[in-house]
Length: 290
Image (tube, one colour):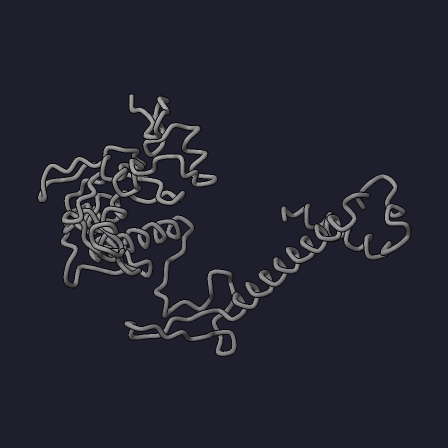
């Protein structure tokens, strides 16, 4: 066990070469009677936990680990051990959006020669996560190549096989056709349909044409269905607003609880009509699940 550096003190050193009592004295008042020549600095304390065997091998962190990464408390705040090592030897950390990536793929390594400033995207794609594994795939699950004209980029930046996508569309079309044939009907092409799925007729006044990139002909949309959707949206928002107003009023009079047995006299006759209206809206909102 290490002994305290203070002259005449034989207690066990627990913090930077000092015992508990001497460390508290020096920290609070910088007592000059305490010998501070043997104090361990933060830098020396950091390197005492690093196994530096050579310049080109991994410097494995011997301290605490979190998810495989070493971490240390620097000036009272937790920090990554590899970032502290880079700061001590390089002088400054990479400027965002750059971050340090382990080239050796050893998370406990703090050797600056094994670190490289890269963007977050590059750092993720170099790893072993799901996104990195999918980005390295060259074929789909059925063996089709994910390149050239057979590759589709989805709006969420994901990749999809064009051959499998077309097969899925054909399969769903055949399933729909089989369902209609069971009812004695026939699935018409989109251009020959006279009614929308809700039963509204495609007329000149009830049809809206929507042009999309990559399509030779526009798609038809039923204006009646769109109007019904807008009305449902407005009604849902109105119910949500009524519920919020009811909750706010309940919180305003929460100490007396407007829904108590003595309602509507709980508010002393003030806002009685408003309380009644809010209570009715609240009950209606709770009834529909908002």
